[in-house]
Amino acid sequence: MKVVILPGNGCTNVLRSNWYGWLHQALNSAGITCIAENMPDPYNARRNIWIPFIKDTLQADEDTILVGHSSGAQAALRYAEEHKVRGVILVAATYTDLGDAGERASGYYPLNQETENLYNFTAMRE
Image (cartoon, rainbow, N blue to C red; front, side, top):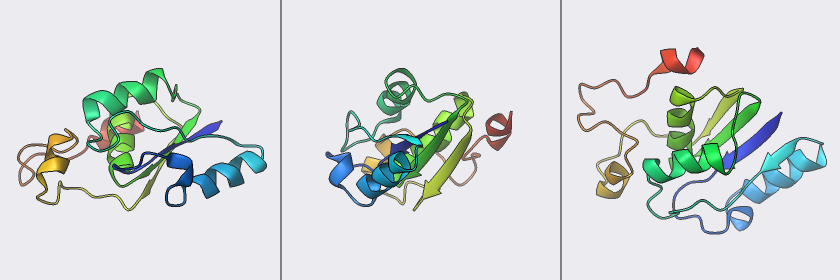
């Protein structure tokens, strides 16, 4: 089992931001492999860049727990829709783009948030 920390957008040094470094150290000290790497496109956190990075570089798989914070929480949910993971832990997650053009441009939210289903929880359970 391994844990992958997915930070919020704007984070350019994951291990020195928020609580990420503390969690990384605590888990690794307890013998649990934890990965906390700087994400590509850290300010925009675009889905079409982050999801492939999680798969190809961070190698999240069915034995991985994703810990997503803010935009990282959105990435974790979207990743879990398409790929099997052991679990997802969300910290300060949103379910809309909050009316923010930058969040909307990230590609995590449907265009019509009033009528479209935000997440495919059935796919996440399978």
